[in-house]
Structures are given as C-alpha cells and as structure tokens.
Amino acid sequence: MKKSAILVAGCALVIGSLCSAPADAKGYFHKTELEMHMDFNRDKGFGTETDILTATVNHFSEWKYGDNFFFFDVEGKDDYKLEAAQYYGEFASRFSLDKIILGADNGSNLLGSFLKESYIKLEYNGGSPVDGYDYIDDALLYGVSFDLDLGQPNFGFTNLSFLIKDFTAIDGHDNSETNWQVTLVWGQPFSLGSLNFNFQGFFDVWEYNNEVVVLTEPQIRLQLNSFVGQDNFLSDSAIGMEFEFSNRFFDQGNSDWYVNPTVFWVTKF
Image (cartoon, rainbow, N blue to C red; front, side, top):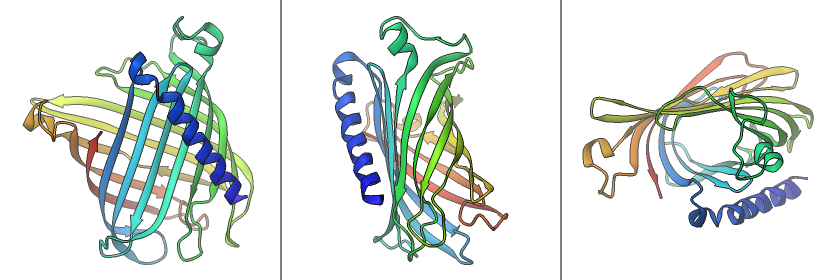
C-alpha cells in the first residue's frame, strides 16, 4: 500500500509539473522556494530535545483549470549534523469548479461574492519513520477547498479546505482509518516603514485515534530586498522565524502542547 501511495504521489507531481509547464507562456503565477531551518531545542514528544537542520523545498503553480502545490522536508540528525535522518512531503492538486463550469476565461465567484474561487482538492501526505515509529502516518486526502475574499491587500490570500483523510499506518503503533481534516492557509505581505515583511502559515485540525490533533506553523519573514533593493542576488531571499505549535501531533495519548521554534533563510528561484 505504501509503495502504491508513493507511486500515486509521484504521478501527481509529474502531472502537476506538466500542467504548470505552459504557465510561463500564459502568465500563470508560479514559484519555487528553498528554506533552510535551524531547529533549536526541538521536542518530538519522545522525552528529549534536539538541535537539527531542516531543508524544505516548496512549489506552487497555477494552470488553466486549477493549481498544484508540494513541499518536501529533509530533517537532519541531532546536533546540526549534515546527514539526513528522515523526510516528509505533501503533494496537492486543486481543480477549479469555477473555471470548469463557467469556463477558464469567464471569471470566478461560482458560489458567492465572499469566495474568490471554489475547488475539488486531492492531496497525498507521506514520509519516512523515525527508528521504526511513523509519527506522521501516510494519508490520502480529498474534498473541497475555497479561496476566501477577505479584501486582503498586497496580494494577500486565505484559503480553507474541508477534507476526508484516509490514513495508512505502516507500523504497529497506529491504525489505518478514515477520518477528517480542516486546513486553513494564509499569506499576508506588509511593510513597516522601509522594511518588507510576510506573515504566512497554515493551521491543520484533524481526527485520529478518536482524538483531535492540532498543528500550526506561522512564519514571519523579513524580505532582504528591504536592504539590497530589487536588482541584487539576495532580492528574492528572506530571513525569519517559524513557530510550530502542536497538540497530540506526536502522540495522540499526550495532550501536552509543544512549541518548536526555528530560524530560517529562504530564497525563491
């Protein structure tokens, strides 16, 4: 089952890349970023805290009838060693009901003025276990997603997804089951004087093993173009902080809240 799910994810990534390939020619938005995080005093609920490096590649691209998103994390071993310890990724495609029903060139707002666009969403989550314990189970998600019209300036965005979540456990600690997930994602650029910032992140809530799990990772970024302008090799980079807040994420039997901060550098290419 795990191999089949990985194959599905790989096919989704290839299809997504092909779908977004003509975006350059037709002017659709797309971006790919590399983030390098220093996690300090990271607590995974195993009774110990570690300092690790995490590298993240994330990509978003639009195409004629929707958009594609994926990210891929590689976590290093303890004490900031440059050696991979585990990996995790999510691959998602959304198909616009507005564009499919109304036509790709006829605008959006199929369901009302407070929605920018409505979608059918398909997503796969998967990664490697840690010492035989897969604390992030593989899952296939499907449901609906909405871009909200909240009047955000400077190309800010908010979207909300309601998903069915099919878990596939690969170790004896967990169960394969079908449940639900709600995901809120946001991004808001803003400026304070000459400094350009971006506040972005996600908030996930889902049910697993009869418990409600919460995971959110807000980020604050300081764009380096605040200092070097737009024509420098650092113009598309930023530095910032991320805070991972979680409850029952690492262990559904543990109701403690965990806070894992990072500092990071990110660049767009």
